[in-house]
Each structure stands twice: as C-alpha cells, then as structure tokens.
Length: 84
Length: 215
Image (cartoon, rainbow over all chains, first blue to last red; front, top):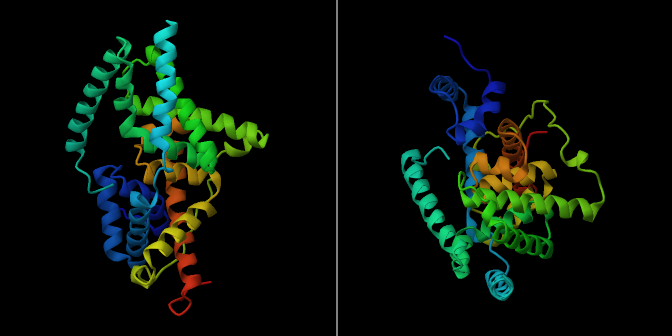
C-alpha cells in the first residue's frame, strides 16, 4: 500500500482541516496519523491554535463603527434623494 | 473546518443568497435604508478584511466606509451570481491594497511576490498539552495570539485573517486578495503552521518552567 511521509502529511494538514481533499488522500493521511505521533500532535496543535484564533470575542469592531457607517450612509441616501 | 456539515452550509447559503437578492431589488427600487440590512451581517468581515491588510484601526475603518459606499453606488453592477458579501469583500480588499500602496509607496511586487515553495518545517512538539494554554489568563492569551499574528509576514497574515478569523471561504479569500485558489491554499497552509509555531514559541518563552522547546 502506498503511504505518505511526514513531509507530505504536513503539506496536506491545512487541506485536511478544511475538509478539502479526496477520500483517497484522506485515508492515506489518517493512516499516517495513526502511526505517527509527531504528525498527530502537529495536526491537533494547529487545529487548537486556529480554534483560539477564530474566537471572535477577542476581535471586536472599534466602538461606534456601525454607528459611523450608518451616519455616512444616511448622508449618501439624503444626497441621492435630493440629487437623482 | 472538518466538523462543519457541508449540506447544512449549502442550504444556508441558498437562503442568504435569496435574502440578498430581495434586499438588493428593494434598494434599487429606492428603498435605500434597506442597505443597512444588507451590510449589517458582514460589517465585521469588511472591517477585518481591511484590517488584515492595513493593520491600523483608523485606516481600516476609513477603507471599510469607502468600500461600503462604493458598493452602494455600484450596486447596479453587481450581478448577483456570487454572494454580495464576496463582492463587497473583494472591493474592500482592493481599496485596502490601494491604500497600502499609497501609504508605503512600495511596489506591490514585494507583497505579491510568488510564494516561496520551500518546505516549511514546523516545530516539533511532544504533546499539545505541553503548551501552557490553561496557564494563560484570557487576556494574556489574546495578547499572545495577537503577537503571533503580528509576527507573520504580511502575505500570510492576510490570508490567515481572512480565512480563519473572518471565516471567509476559500473562494471569497481568493476574491478579496485577488490571488488564485491554489495560491490561497498554499499560503494558508504555510500561514497556519507558522502561526502555530509563533504562538507556541511565545507561550514557551513566557513560561520557561514548561519550556522544552527543541532547538
């Protein structure tokens, strides 16, 4: 059976996290992960860092952002109403 | 990510598309106020797309406003094949890059240089639990993440921010950055491994008791 080496696995980790690979590649990759602790840890830790990053609570919009967008648009709507 | 149910996502996507079409029709008919509803769900992604590229709050906000205005004025040209969000985000991406070019007066060649195809070798880690995440206070964790993100070279930070923080899909990321889908995937792969490494090495550096970083 064809197997993947660590380097090939590393290259595919991102696609694996996105569920963006062929079923065949997925099987090969998972077979490797079962055998290789290093790659399994690499996958887990990368996944965990990305989950932390994705936590939107940490990245808020600046205070008043939506309000200012609305103000700006209100002016534009007014112009449009009067203009054309 | 892997756990997402793609079928659910697709029907959700259809609903969003239909809703967008309705709103756009109304806006074009002169009911301008409905534009607020169209942009409200994507404001945050608009801002962070700009921020991912510009890295300053003031510029990111200005560019967000410009892009939102530009999209309103050009709504007629939006063909409704893609999602409105993808279209708006590609406008934001464009505006932000133009601003960056002006601000820095550097050629975009530098930013758009082809990816170095050399293999990226991540730090080896005996076990994930060696990273003292639990030991980090929430605030500190956020600071470490922000540091790790800031430490990434620009092309990697952009792609990572759009894809993993703003949660754009690959096609939307490709539109916002004006690079091909394969280029998005290559950069993203590198960016994800790098941010993991930066985060780990920073966490270790501050918790040397746990630190067993390999040279």
